[in-house]
Length: 426
Image (cartoon, rainbow, N blue to C red):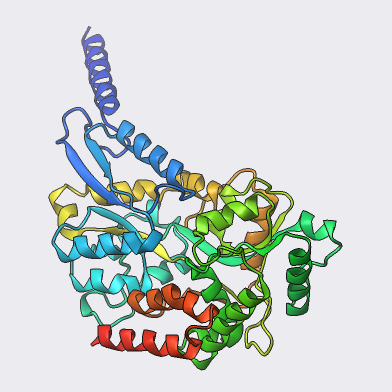
């Protein structure tokens, strides 16, 4: 009888424990009794951004698993630097978000100067089950090496989606006109002239939103050393190459006002033969079989190696230090969820290079060509807008139209941008 009572008591305890575990969510928090938490999250996953739907799905799944948490999505587009304006204004006014997916490098400086950014090092050491999946090479891009003592040598953001920039080619159009793929400058120019004569746009490029044209041609002209030296003489050469291509009629007729999303559509619809853009475009391609990504050919007299590319991890997940403490660590928990292998795989399935170990099923031929390009790269350089201040880069980008139309020289434009750089840095 005593044994029976002991067994019965043990069964009751087990049932109680099982029911208690059932009340807990995946984060170990009692979802039914936990205090309600609101987390403001600012990203650029909105509108035409390829990861918009994935982001919305991730938010929905997280809130389903954690009913006590409400994610307030304040996604803001990158167009016209809207995301930069919002983030910097929010941090400067004391209205910083709980969680922010934002650019790293030079863009991180004003956020770090505020002292409001959470440092991840202790969390990375403490939670190795999570952190062991993050590539150390990716964390190098979000480790601060500037003059702010509090953050010196510290990880201030968690990378997730890496990128590369390269030359997208509609291979079927090249085959149709018996053209070799543009692996060098002569073949590239031959393709430009041939497609123009056939009524096909040679390069789907926007002068209005010329980020990738500027970055790749400056790298091609000066190589990694020139690109890494702010306002190096080779930058002038890179901008003049864009001007030469514009004069040749290599871009759409409305390139001065065309948005990048419209340029992508021209390429995807086979109205353009080539496009210089980033890995984020892969998900939006209609033809993922007859499209290939390769390095931009080295310009005449250029210092780049034929396989030098622009790439890396240009954005990361920031968390507000104070708000994380006030909200019982939920902002950090949310970022850990986003940067888990399962969620990472969903983002990378759309496009990009993973910062976190994950299995991406059914990799398309075009995505594989991008991975191969990055794997074989002689060097991978970050965009120059991570090298110089955003205000200076914006000047170069917005006034490039004056250069290609002959109203201003590349030398003059770079001198003006350097003045902005010097003034803002003071």
